[in-house]
Amino acid sequence: MHPLIVLGIGLMVVSCVISGIDSVRTMRQGREPERRIRSFMLAGGMLVAGGILVAIGAALS
Image (tube, rainbow, N blue to C red; front, side):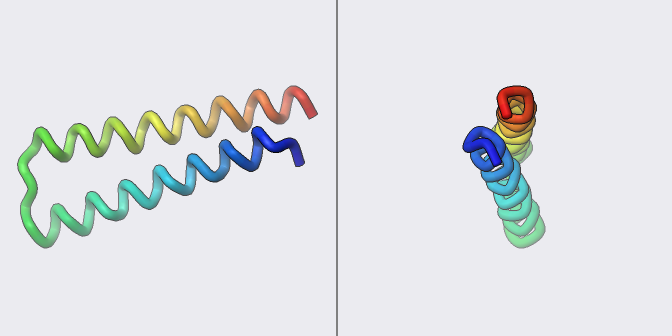
């Protein structure tokens, strides 16, 4: 398996972890919308970056 695929999958897992942490914090503390949007954008960016790396790695292998 190409290293970019492994890195991309790792970024996708990190995205899921960030989303999970944000969800738990929101349920416990009731966070303000601005912080939730930043966390959502970070998780979404990690997911897209991971997908791009997997696609590039698959094309190169």
